Amino acid sequence: MSGLLSSVSESDTRGTSSPVVVLISVAMFSLALALYMGYSSAITSDMSADRDVSEPALQRIWDEIANAGAYDRSVGLENAISTETLPQGRTTYVAITYTNNTGEQQLEEHVKFESDGTAASYSETPIPDHANTSSRPISVRYGPQEVKGARLHVGVA
Image 1 (spheres, one colour):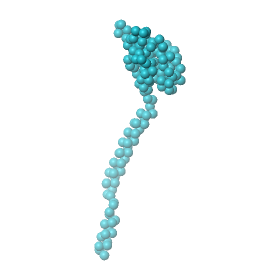
Image 2 (tube, rainbow, N blue to C red):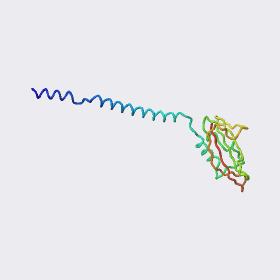
Image 3 (cartoon, rainbow, N blue to C red):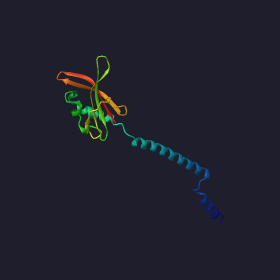
Image 4 (cartoon, rainbow, N blue to C red):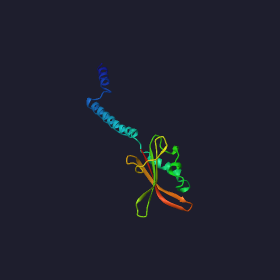
């Protein structure tokens, strides 16, 4: 009979944990959950913020206007850029500058596209300060034998 009582008392203690171990495991779980929530909220806040689309817009515009390796100045930016190339729902500024003989940047040509894709003239600086901007070199063809280096700038607001 004593063997029966000892087996019952062993089964009562089997599978139980001390309160200290339970508190430590709950604390570790809570810490892991808090770290995960902090990490995931940082990621989701980045996803909801306005994305800078000036770099992909620059690449698409460059691909479209620099056909045959150079932008043909006689066409004009307004006619050379199609609506499908522009970021949807954003105002896009496109400018071409070159370095003159004194080393200063000179504005060659600029155009503003409204959020619906229509070109609009404007007299302010080529690309406003509030726009996200990107730029890259581009060759500009002025005539059959005249090609000069310039810089293509794209701003998206």
